[in-house]
Image 1 (cartoon, one colour):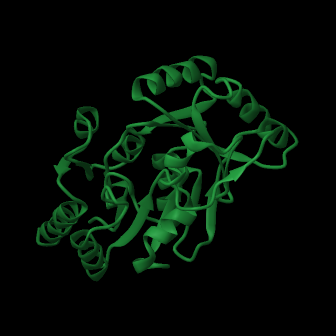
Image 2: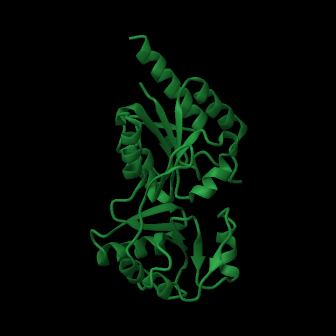
Image 3: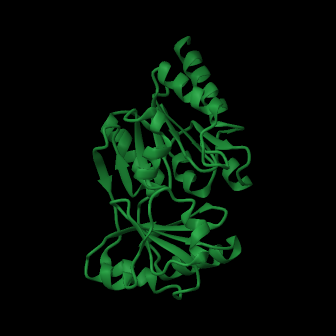
Length: 269
């Protein structure tokens, strides 16, 4: 029996206006009525997840920043991960200062750029908490004044794929990388992913991996898909994503209908 439903946000539960449509909202409420627990697993920070899921406040678990933070439904921090100051500094030196727009995320849900400019504006608008500027990020990190948990690079997909290859070549075995959106590359500490975070969460909850169902649309969701036989990819996701899921759906509502039907069939056997 499935006990926990895990959903990605962008491209999955959120529409293009960064809202949850009425049908999906009703389906989430329906899932609660059927006794399911809910976890949101996103590249977004926990503070953003809380804003977006306000209708279900204190009723869901939250895996933020691709697994760098895990919060229980009462906002207790179960676990977090971060780069060492030395590795953070080395990672920031991979690209030139103006080669890519990039944000530095911290476990306290703060995020930084070196300089605010017009190029940053469109990307800042996609993040739901205030941006900060810091001219000497490398110095602040090296002095351990802030701890970096995620680096996000924005640009053309082809260039991001090339950048990802540079990171993988130079930092083999030290980092995780994900193309988390059509124009975003996330760089994470080693062994940090949505899947790794979910393993810790379900261990804490005392449930098995085949008792969860995961819904997503991007490469950073594949580690979740690998964890359970109940995986749902959005129909608009790339072929590589759809091929790794057990079921392809048009919406979160459709996935929840499948999950409820699966539990019903399992209970009648």
